[in-house]
Amino acid sequence: MRAEDRGSRIEDRGSKIEDRRSRIATRYSILDPRSSILFVSSAFSILIFSLGAFAQNPAGREAPRPARTDKNKSAAKPAKPAGNAQGDKPSKPASNRAQSSKSKSVRANLTIVAPPGTAVEVDGKRRGVVGARGELTVPRLAPGDHQLGIFAEGYEPWREIFVMSVASTKFEPPLKKKPPAGRLALIVDEPGTEILIDETQRFTTTQWQVRLIIEVAPGVRQLRAIKPGFKEWSETVVVKAKETAMVNIELKRSLDMEMLRIPEGPFICGDDRGAKDQRPSHQVATSEFEISRAEVTNRLYKFFIDDTGRPAPQGLDYGWDGNNYPEGQDDFPVVFVSWEDAVAFCEWFSVETGHRYRLPTEAEWEKAAKQGGDQYKSAGRVWEWCSDWYDHDYYKLRERINPQGPARGKQYRMLGREGEAKVIRGGGFGFGSVSRRAAERGYFLPKMTRSDIGFRIVREVKQ
Image: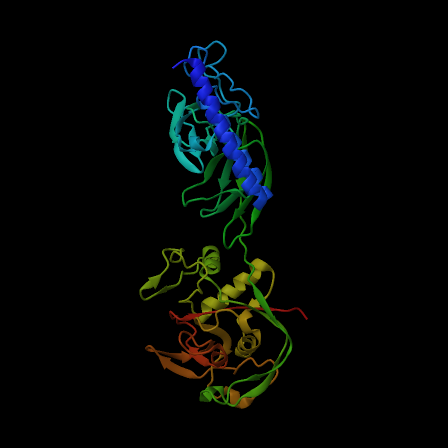
């Protein structure tokens, strides 16, 4: 078919479409103007598409369709070649931080460059020690922030946040060398002494340690030495780099006991509900005095026998090893001591401290137990020696002002021996409440010892 005929046929078809569009538009314009407008627009689009679809070039062939373009979008940019300007290596990212969410699943190696023997921590976990070649590789580390800790001998500890990239990385932390250290040469005269340096370093000397060499940072160092039963020792020492400072630590015994002051005044002595030797109850007045809050301990009694040569406490299945009490019983009440041992201790203690000490009367003991409350410690752990002779009928005399007990004691026979007995107070083990034990009376021969008898002491108050 010739091009002219095909063109004429296309024009006839276009005319028919146009006539049909006019008839429909007229019909819908009568009904609804908006519908007419929509219909005309749709028909016009169909016409344009049809003409474009069947367009031909002058040779009678179909003309090629033009490419669709979006006027609102710019033309596509040419893709950048991989690598840098020279085309040899890819460019590095601006920072070590992970570039996308996909990179979070990537793991890479971090190689730490540091002196051999350096300990490495990552996020608080030990990851190894730098080897002889000066490197340690931490494998499969996720991109992002990590807390690094680097600890090398002779260097200050290094702790920082390190940002790991998606690629394996080498990192050399900026370590700073410590200043040259100094030394403390400590000479300690007492084993078991706890020594503190600047309240941060602490250690306890052993039985055989006499001299200790401690490396410390140069500067002013504060020293303290502590041992139970001794006064605390302290001193400030200047330590210079690469020099040794000699320090002699001499501890002095602490012989002071914790005392409870009992005011002057009356109290009710005895208990009408108790045993016969506690009756009748009656009012008694005492002068002001101070009594030890607890019994004399093994630690304090050891000072006494070390100085005087008096025999150490000994008993059945119990005893001291020479002048040393059983381990771990420093603050236990000393037991297996006679009344005569207790009196001798008070005389020695008075000379050592410059105060007058003695055994309490049983009236003083009972008043302290009744009025001292929780401050009167350990009542009832053991029986305790008092200064009075014992007479089970003594309360019938109703002595009211600072009673000292009878002039002589009653004769008693016990454990194959016979003699006058001294008062013991406190009730010992398993004798009920403290309020009941406060009035409990007992007796024992003054030259004898027992596993449940100790003593506490009174310090007289100067009037």
